[in-house]
Length: 177
Image 1: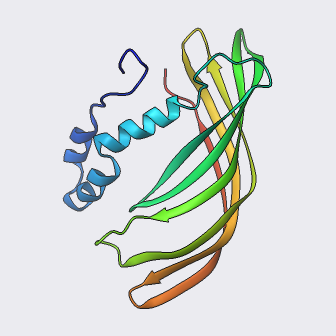
Image 2: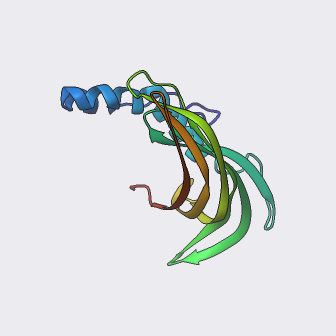
Image 3: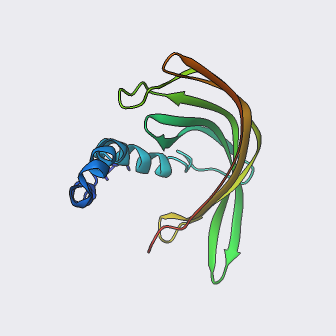
């Protein structure tokens, strides 16, 4: 990271990809490129507000979830500072999180015979929490539950495939010490 808190480099991914079987390595090279890993890590850091906040203050962020093979879900997120909470012997800053909108995208990929024709998805429900440790200067846990639904239309070759999506996602992360 640089002095401005921006992620500038990652290490180790290329070596892991090099050790993977050849067919898997080709897929992993695009899914876990240095650029993609930097963007993902920076997005995690950008959850925090860019200025000091007080209880009840809110801020918005755009976050993209990589689904693989060029597929993404992009969420408009709303965060709210909820104050400090006691967790064991520590005081942590608690931030509430909720997705307000969602967009599905599929980047054209010559290895996949699928293209996106139409996507009309909505967030049915969303709630989440981020716990930040000021002493450590990092997020110590993040969890969320989001339900999305709507119409999705794909083309596979010359055939159109339309359907309804009803997806519930749960996420919990606790970075290693």
